[in-house]
Length: 229
Image 1 (tube, helix red, strand yellow):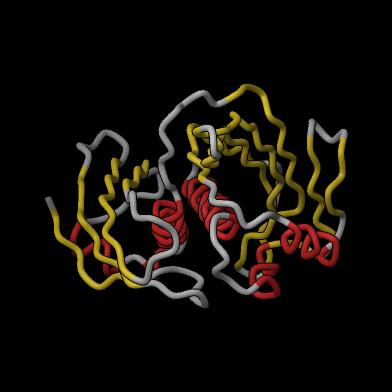
Image 2: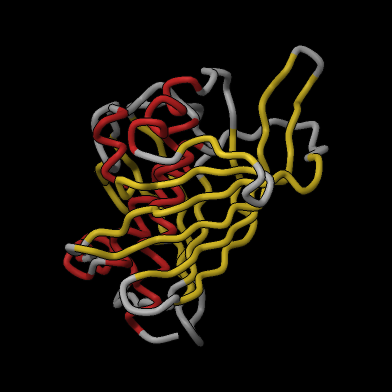
């Protein structure tokens, strides 16, 4: 994977984490959140068989109609593919969970997305979400903080100018870095701790403990301290 393609993959993953973090709490301003999407964005389901939104306006209405029930979305696997100049596709599989009176309900959902890169910003053009299996895990595990941190880390890996605070703790970062985040804080939280492991190509994993501050209007949380392990 070229450096450009790798940075596009990180930018796409940052969008995916921001998408889920927004769905999992009442934090965030919907009009501001819409900057992640092209004006003619489409949201479909069941491999395109159902259309939920076909514009900024209809997608905003869809967001506003999403139930406020507690939920989690654990990203299991993601694949990035280049699709020519200025665009690409991110496909990922997610384990969705929500607590119920009888335990935990959930599903394994496959997402296929198209993303453009214009004016230095990545934006969704299209998203399709299709359930493929039930999620039978009986233990609910929150994912909001991990998405907030994942969005921050992947955004930094996509934009070298945003990396200095992480480079100081982890050393030089490569665009091919693989990122894992563990941050089990309940959603939402104004402060929390995350453990982040970053593994570069042909390199040993490096882990840091990050303390973060957050608020409802922030695009990403703020790092208050980083400790290398």
